[in-house]
Image (cartoon, rainbow, N blue to C red; front, top):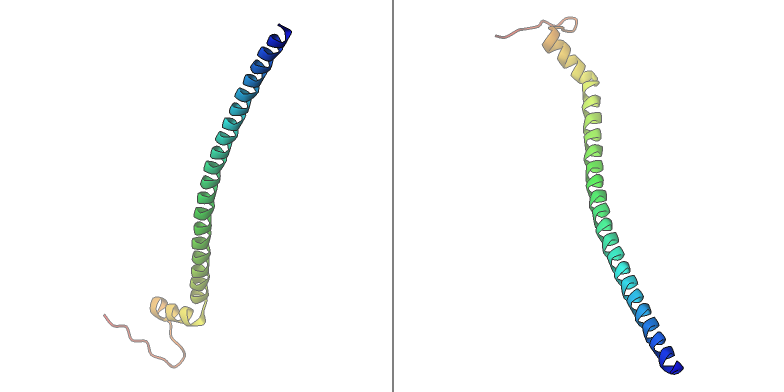
Length: 97
């Protein structure tokens, strides 16, 4: 009789352990899936930010080139001649219309 009671308790304990183990494995599975989804989102955002960074760096280079050109003596002289009707000594300015 005591043997039967002990056996029933062992079966009950085994069922509890089995259910707990299945629940633990399911929890680990869902945690892994959630982490993979989060990792995919982060990777996508990283790629987008890297593209934006490259675009910004290209724009910076273009702006620096534009500043360099606008500050050049050649450009300043062109503007002085065209917009301000200035000329060098000994030159005669002709304005066409």
